[in-house]
Length: 180
Image (tube, rainbow, N blue to C red):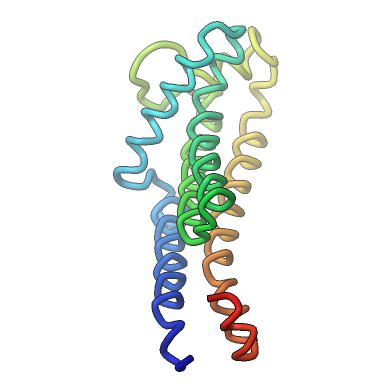
């Protein structure tokens, strides 16, 4: 085994870490939706409402935001468990984190209802309002927790991409060959 034999794996992991970090900067650094992914998140959000349509209204209201975060998490789990593709899983985890950032902005808007909606009732104004949990005053705290969880997802994703190369760097050549 040569010193360069692990280079493609190293570059894939470094590129994945850079991609995850870029997603984090686009969402958290700019405090905005990630281009393209934001539209996909919106589609998944609306899909969540459709899937939950037979549920109680409060569940239907919350399922949009839950689905837009849960689907990227499910795809990440698939890549990690079924395919053992760590970088793909970490990119999806970072995507889930940016989606949580988007959901937190929607939750935080519940008391004000200033965000432009594509129609209907403001999901979180309803869910946290008097017809739901009657906790509209907690919208900021709920949004902060969701945003923090999203940030942690992005940070774990960056770290997850870097963990493999860092672990491999500390191994003896015989241990490294066993992983290939």
